[in-house]
Length: 186
Length: 186
Image (tube, rainbow over all chains, first blue to last red; front, side, top):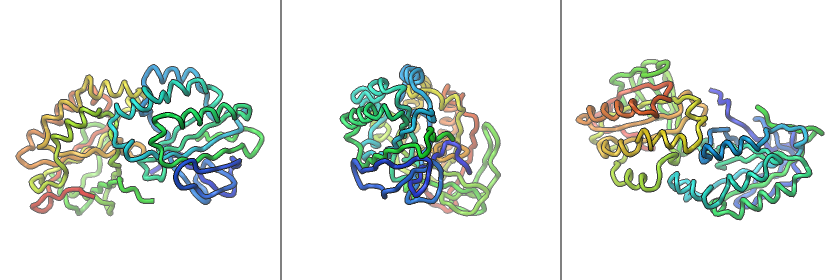
């Protein structure tokens, strides 16, 4: 049966997003491709994830996020990044309160990313329960003038205690293949 | 690719578990079947779920559960129940702390089920992110002499605030088709 929350990212020879550069930050790389498509098409690889309910965000934090964030597909957001991430078994073996403590109380994942809103729009796709090679597919969209800000976001996240559990991470920088924003609206 | 955490439940004409009775508690029923198999075979229906990390259990609670619970597949546990459950969108739209508050602080899901251990062994399968018709497939195994205790567990859960969010629930009672416990070890 169909899953309306399921999103595919296919790396191949064609697609609405042109690859500017890709590299493995941790763990084995993905095959180099020229384009990324946000649908299930032929390609060198296809990654799948679902847009699901929040796992750590609390009520007040959710309100703060909703107030500041903007949606995907903004015309000015002609740059994007796909960052697939896998975390260690040691992370998944933790209890909910232990994961939450590392995620927010100590790594400040939510609070410290607020200042990157609304410049950087993002969507998280959960992949672990699908048996995928990555646990998460993170997707970001921003205008070209915010590239330095986006790099700052990545540096900040990678310095956190939470990131010590990341065992595989690929960074794929993308530019809209046409002049407008390609978006990934479903 | 394969998903080692993925479990199938197929209702059909054959299988290690014979259906004693099945009924819809809420929402539309599943087609009546004579047997349930815990593998992906031909049948009237197949439900899928993954054995995943805990979503609400905190560290101390996890320790209390691990201390008391027993595994699936015990020879004496010749009775089982498969209870697929779907929760309302209103549940999934809640923030993590709101869901946890209903789940444990007010519904006492973890604390109040401790007294049913180790008599009743159980395993939770997450299905929502797979695009399945149910959000969870709950599986219980117990010895025939604990049937009344199991019924008590169901009554208790259904009286909680958490259960107000359940929009579909099927109760399928099963007996091991041979004399020993059929188990669902993977």
